[in-house]
Image: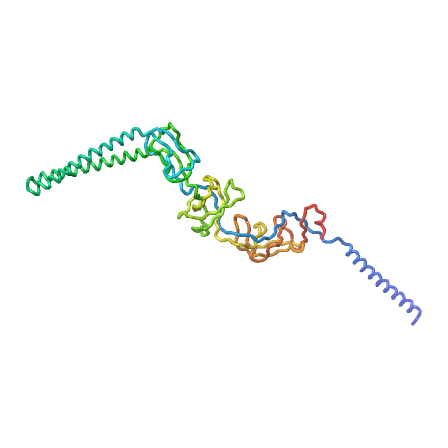
Length: 379
C-alpha cells in the first residue's frame, strides 16, 4: 500500500472515531436533559369538587307537601237564636264529650217547653176519655143497645184524640230539643281550636260558635303528579318533616287517594293519616316529605356526579391520583336526596369528581387541595 493510501485510511478512521464520540456524547446529553425535565403538572381541584360514594338508604316515590289538619274536627254551630249568657271553654281547652261549652238565653224556649208539656197533659186526658168512650160504645154495640153510627162516632173521636196526643208529644219533643240546644256541648273529646263567640253576643241558627278537633290523629292533604300515581298505594308509608320540628322525622300512611285528577294541574289529591298520640303535631303546620314505593340500602352517588347525557351514564373517578372515565349502571333515583343508586361501575369508598372538575380530560393527574396550593402542581 502506498504512503498516500495509508494517510487517507488514517484520516477516514479518525473521522469515524470522531463521529462515534460525538454520537455518544449527544446521547448522554439527551438522557441528562430528559432526567432534568420537570415532572407532569397535576390539575388542582378543591374539596368542593369531590364526593365519595357511600352506602346509604335509597328510596323511590314522589315528594309531597301540604298542611297538617286534624283527622277529626267539628265546627259547633248555634241551633237556636238568642244571646250568649256565658262561655265555659277557651281556645286550647281540652274537653270531654258532652262538656258544656256555652249557654244561650233559654227563657223563651223554656216557656215554650212548659206550654208544650201542658199541651201533652191535656191531649193525654182527652185521649184517655176518648179511649174509654170507645170501649163503652163497643160493649153497648155488642148488646145491641146503640146504633152502629154511634159506635163509628166513638171510633172517630178516639182516632182524633190519639192524633192530637201524638202532635202534642212531637211539639214537646221539639221544645225539649230546642231547650237542650241552648246549652252548647262538645260533640266529642278533643281540644277547642277556635272560639268564635263571647258572653253577650247574639247568635242566630247556623252561626259558628266553637271548633273542636281530636288531636290524637292528624292528616296531611297533598297532591302528586298523575304520572307518578303508580308509585302511590293505599297503606304506603310516608316520611316527612314538619315546620317547627327541625331534624325530626315523622311517619304516616296513605289512607285515601282521590279517584280523579285535577284537569288543570294534572295532580291527584292524597290523604296521609298520621298517629299523634303524644300530641306533638299541631294542625296548620306545613309538612313536606315523600311516599316510599321502594326502599333499601345501596351504594349511592350524588346526582350531579353522574353524566346522563350520553347513551350510557358515566362518572369521572379519581384513582391513583389520575382521573378516569367509568361507565355506571344506575338503579333507583331518590328525588328527595338527589342521589342515584349505583348497581355497577363504582363501589362505596370511590372518589368522584363533580362540577367543573368533570371537564378534566380522562388520564390527567389530579390532586385535591386549594387551587393555589403549590403541592397541587407536583405529581
